[in-house]
Image (cartoon, rainbow, N blue to C red; front, side, top):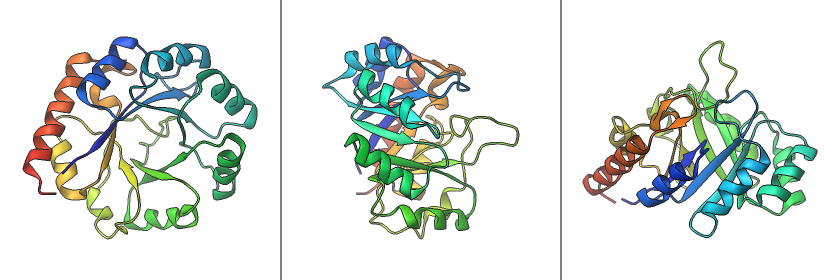
Length: 219
């Protein structure tokens, strides 16, 4: 099988190079003040310039208003927007129409019934991202380093285009791919030495594990 990989929450050119060298298809920049991975639009613009033309650039926001998104889009010039909050289908459609960019809508999952939430977004969002529900007390909608029960995806419509996220690392990625057969994965905390600090060695190990798993899992 072949899997596209997104490394999210990048803050340095070295980490971007490690992600791209490993074979990433996407790099993500976080615009959420409470996150240890938060960057300003100006910081992200410089980083995006380093990555542009080599990989898809994703701007990740959480319930951002139009003014915030206007600044991100005009300064960073991302290829895709990721909405990681409680944005409604109408808001997703509004953002797509306003900026003319594809939108990936994130959902936090814990149990089978949580998948019902995506139905109104089908045909609206261009891609989905499935993350774990945050632990109690966490102020972060993602990047918490926890996984969800991947078996709940077993009955998911195969036509749904999604990326798997939530606690993915070199140690569990083979199981994740075997259980879900997803075509896309997103890693953040699983390739960090500390919250918000991407580790070049862990990024390389993650990609090694992904490619090893690909060779062992039938297409």
